Image (cartoon, rainbow, N blue to C red):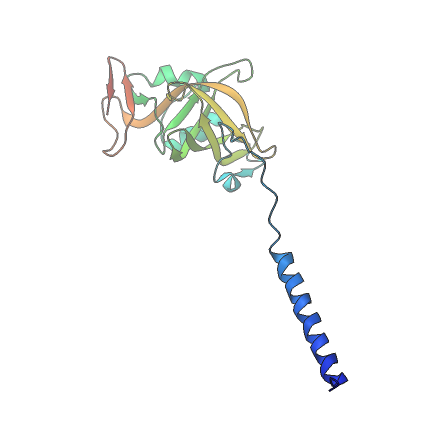
Length: 202
């Protein structure tokens, strides 16, 4: 008995349809090539670097900007703030929000530099707001990382948002807190406080 040509044609179309479906599924199941080994750098990109903003044309210098933002009443070149604060304001080696970061004088920073800590991200990363890091501009929420061997914030790198890299190493004196000399920071903070006659860890 001969097969009906219409039925044979229908069966052939069904087999071709199944084959096409299997080929499509096979295309979805092609395994990805093995990923290359990635070496994670010691200094990873800051998590919130996109939040950095630059306000050009503000005309501010780092000293009056830091003084206005922190309420710390010190005058003079930025690098002199560390010694000037002795006996007047508490100083320390760990960042607290609102404290002033003092960079030492170098060939690149002839007058030193000041920044105000706006956030503590982790044990080796903070955010600072500061003026005149770029001439005439105020930069807020700039990432700063500590690369000092002792994690004492004496060697710092600043995040370059445009180049997406950490910049040169800058030496820092420490942080000045808006607290009278002899007054400890609020409970719940951990910092080394340096005053004229003692060195106490809180």
